[in-house]
Length: 246
Image (cartoon, rainbow, N blue to C red; front, side, top):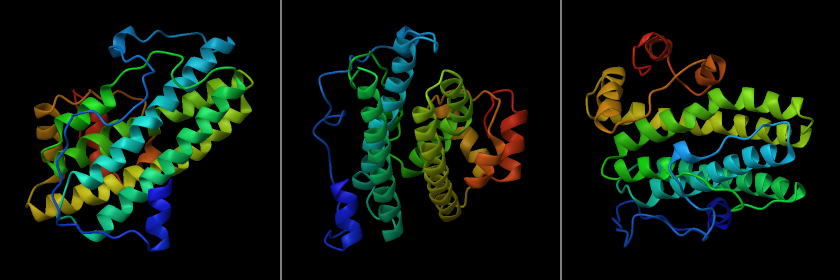
């Protein structure tokens, strides 16, 4: 992504104290895919080409939203340390790579991004947490993106079993990078909790309830979550809570 490359080249200037405002709630996006409620997104069998294409399309849509989520975390929250903005620019660049890899693979299957309906739940959480960077770090990277750590291995196995080794390889790249993205969310969530003198696990529970975060259900990819910086106390709370939260 050009923005991330400009930052790495040292040609992009940063003023972390400037506060910006948006004219609308939804960032620029193509006319397709059609956005529908999550429950209306059809599930298709992975043993068919259309079913695999629909699965790849869903992943492509997640990565498209992830680009905007990373950029939104940059412009929306002023006054954070310089490293915060550098972290999320790196994330945006990696999410753009993931989108490009998946969109290109989708084309080899005879489909394009926008050919299947998709849902908007990822961006809806961004809108809910637009007023508090602590809530954003808690509920987007540490919740919604962390769910991808759990979902990636079984999805990879299904694609490999169906003979799509190229897609399985792309998921390996995405999982590797997403561990780092969730780790960034954990880093800044922990820092903000320290700054506000808040206990992280109890604060997460409060935020999850207040913002109606999705209930997390196992099985959980504990090695990936550990690599992403979740503590053993957080993982114990995640596995033992009635609401599957920590």
